Length: 341
Image 1: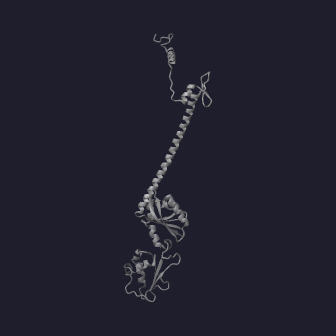
Image 2 (image 1 turned 180 degrees about the vertical axis):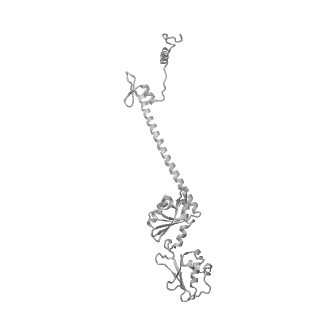
């Protein structure tokens, strides 16, 4: 940054008219490339002495303005017949010592004027916010609120991490713990609004005396396409990870069912082997001794471990059962009372 100071003394009675001309100036310098700030001062002891102080990114920016048509037009408001003291008139180009750099520029946090901050704080196009060292948002402009789809009340005091993807939140935490006053860092940050819709900003993080500022620039093509594609890929990876976890649980459940079926099969196979080898039967009651060394009915034993077995009657038993049923029925009982009279 450079400061250019112009001083002159009004040599006739036009001092008050000159002062009014500066109050009503056309403000063309505000649109000059590289312009940072402007102040007009008068001598406390001599009101005819004027000092113009302008701030520029570098000396080349000032020279380009000074030689341009807009500079000439900005002086048209001066009163006619103005006379200046040539011995007092002088232009000085000054370099600040603190924070000065080789190319005459300085970090944004060192030179931004109050007017620039006011423009950023009211902008609806350029996202700008301030955060505390703990990551809480203390200021945010309308552009930031439009991007997040929230009101100022819903944003102020909240952590900025709540609106960043996890990797970008980690980067910003590291950044604000290492950034020193007068330094700034640029990084592409991916935000998520209240509807979980992602958007990307090329952000400049600058250290302030009481915290940090974050200035966002919309990502232009093809960077925007690349960023959106990256976010979509991240979302797809998240979906695949969730699906993989679901399939893993399903596989574990299936494996458990298979292990149980295998265990049941092994148990059945043990009993089949036992039958093929020798099946302990009680000579008295005909019960069978199972794997738990307990005696149980052979029919129950077979029905439990061998579901392929079915039940039925042999011809002799069938005749016997039918005879018993016939005897128990009223028609088969000769001694039964004839209820028909």
